[in-house]
Length: 74
Image (cartoon, rainbow, N blue to C red; front, side):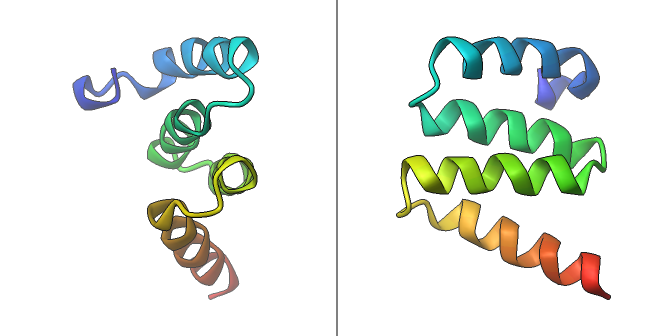
């Protein structure tokens, strides 16, 4: 749905998936990307961090958190 430009509509679906599968890092990643696309940096960072709690080896999540944190400071 994100690739179709329907990020706002995708958030409840992604949240449902996260709620149903709380140990799936990819679910947190999808929810984080949805928030990121919509410009909600705080929520995006929160979900990327949750993804890293589940799987600390996800380099893309690390890069997103670092980049968004850096942008928030500037």
